[in-house]
Image (cartoon, rainbow, N blue to C red; front, top):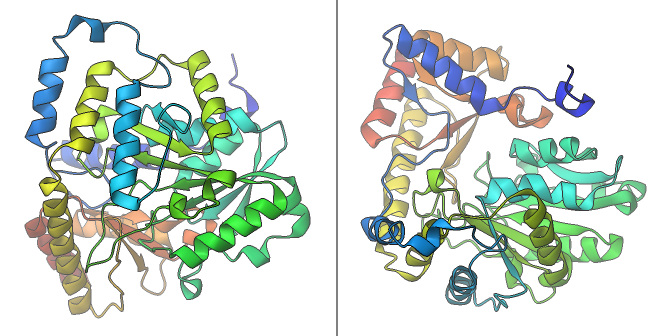
Length: 385
């Protein structure tokens, strides 16, 4: 029995291939340093775990949760937005819970696209923007992200006839994979563009709390007219080391929130309530661990930048995310270079072309191993250079 055409056209997920390479190397007894996958290596803060442990024994939490999420959890999300960004959200109508932001990013295309509809997708970018579009029967239109433009899409380069036919625009700052950041002026342009062409903006803000050198990332929703045209996806995964817990949210435009809630009520049964109570503890509890996490990643970023300097690579350290986006040395493709580094230095890097055609010529480093391992990784790379 054949899968449908969308699945037949779907390549294996990038990180599934990387995980397979890691497994194969370790089966051969090789000490692999994994700078490939952006999965935090630190534990979830203890006070969050304690609330989870208590909530898991509460029998009402063993029943079906609300697909939109506990109102108490959505209130915690709204409160966090108010404290962090000065954004006022109605928790009843402008927040919906997600099984991690990835789930919502993938599913929003199913809620908005008819066959053949267009989504505007950044390239290089998180693969799920394009994958969700394709699985929903839509067509991704690539918005190139070039270094000379600060890895921001040039909206003026999008043909008017494409913009008129587009349903969604995905943007993501601090950015995966480039580490680029965006300012309020850029978001103003996005809002004007979206209003002109009746496009729903989908801002992926999963890395907003990973920022360095005194930088604080803004929320797209900070702009007064943002909720008229857009939503923001966020997650507890990176901020609180909760990638495996699978909890996040979509907030903003109330019509889009209602549509997503209605979609989810038909395809899943919501987030386990004990995890939602843990999420409340994360958002409302002490935030010391977040500041410590930022400092830790900044130290790792600086160690990687020093390693690059010793290799003679030109590089500007990112202000956000826990990624570093680096040009591949001459005479290599992205895949060739990453395969060579794995084979000769036993270090996993992510080839840039895994994030789209405009990622060719780059590779991504994830700062999700200890500083000592990052230093060791660059020693190995230097030894074979």
